[in-house]
Length: 255
Ligand SMILES: NC(=O)c1ccc[n+]([C@@H]2O[C@H](COP(=O)([O-])OP(=O)(O)OC[C@H]3O[C@@H](n4cnc5c(N)ncnc54)[C@H](OP(=O)(O)O)[C@@H]3O)[C@@H](O)[C@H]2O)c1
Image 1 (cartoon, rainbow, N blue to C red):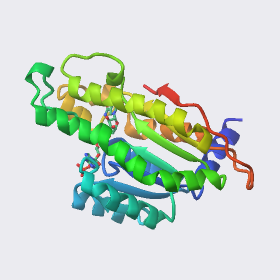
Image 2: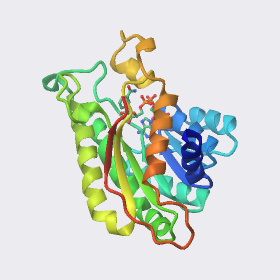
Image 3: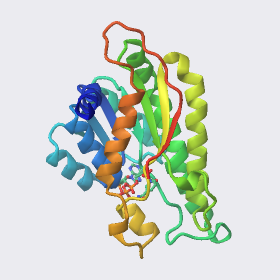
């Protein structure tokens, strides 16, 4: 039974067109690999050219894009390369993220520029990129392939952890954005997910909590598998010609 379910969720990814921001490290890289392993066509975005070229070399089928989601002027070039590289888009994962000040700081000690960077990367970037790609996503939904936007969240979106104010406020805004967008686009067949992957052994976590023991943290590959399952569950069943149905916004604490 488990195998049948697994095959079905893998089947839903076959030939899916998936874009992942922050696809050269941690969870994003694991999502690129998980999506490719499930048969998807993948585009990924990151700022560092060397990192993008390295991942593109390692995964010949993945389309690497150099860009910064926090920069307004980068959004349309990124969106055009995603749609051009994949020939459309079924799944967008807004995964790239900024912590704000590092080391983490009390709000009163947080520089405005660090707060702005967290908002620009974690809220404005996903808003702009999603908006630029809505036409492609709605087209995919209309022809029955389904369309899903996964905004990667955090428990800091819900809990008021001291020193996590810039990051937490930005993730709370992204979470709310996901819910509103889901309500607004339900009828179009575009579903929004806001999912917390849990505490993972990644460079971002090491930067935020330098003294944490990596052995106690989740592997990003495990989180990527869980998120891929959630995306598959939000897609309409594969039956050509059948109109897609929108799904409710899903919130999962995968930790
Ligand atoms: N790690 C955890 O414990 C944890 C817990 C809860 C939630 N999360 C969430 O999980 C997601 C992934 O985190 P992670 O720990 O995997 O991070 P990570 O290992 O630091 O990877 C971040 C990725 O995003 C890219 N990136 C950063 N800023 C970018 C920008 N402005 N534009 C484009 N790409 C950018 C980075 O490449 P470049 O530097 O080359 O741009 C890199 O590929 C984030 O949304 C994070 O908030 C993580």
